[in-house]
Length: 163
Image 1 (cartoon, helix red, strand yellow):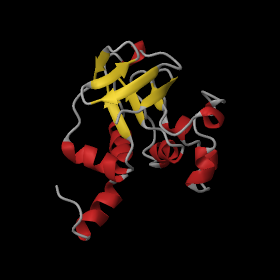
Image 2 (cartoon, helix red, strand yellow; image 1 turned 60 degrees about the vertical axis):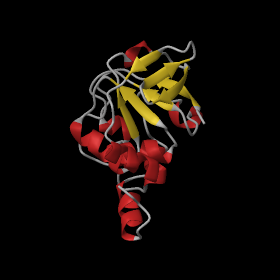
Image 3 (cartoon, one colour; image 1 turned 60 degrees about the horizontal axis):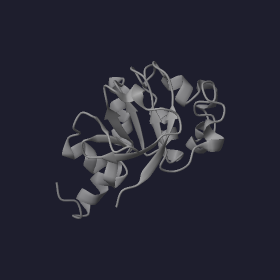
Image 4 (cartoon, one colour; image 1 turned 45 degrees about the vertical axis):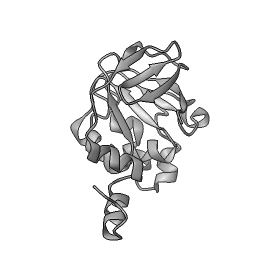
C-alpha cells in the first residue's frame, strides 16, 4: 500500500531551536510540539496532518543536540523529512525516535503542497517522476518501522524482532 503525503516546504539551515524552541524545553513533548516551527511557519502546528512530509534545504537540524527537535515532529505525525543534508546529531536522534530522514540532493525541487509518495528509490512526485534519495541501511529502517530504537530493543528482548 502506498500513501500519498503533502509537502511542507522550508528553507536551508533549519535549526533545532526552531523545531523545539528553548523557551518550552521545561515542558513535555506535547507542549514543545505545539510550538514546533512557529518562528518559521506559524501555520505549521495547526495545519500539519499525520503523514505529511517536511522538505527543506541543506543542513536540516543544525544547532543543539536536543532530541525533542525530532520528537516534536514525531509527535505531530510527520512521516519524513526530505533534505539535501542533515546535522549528524539530528540524524541520529531522528532515527532513534523512528523519524524517517531522506537525504535527497534534489529535495528543493519539491514545492509547498505537492503530493508525494515515498518509494524505495526516493520521493515520487504526482507526475510519476522520482527524485532519488540515498539508500537507508536496513537497521535504520527497522527503527523507523518499529517506531524508534527503544521499540526495537524491546522487541529484541521479547524475542519478536529478527535482525
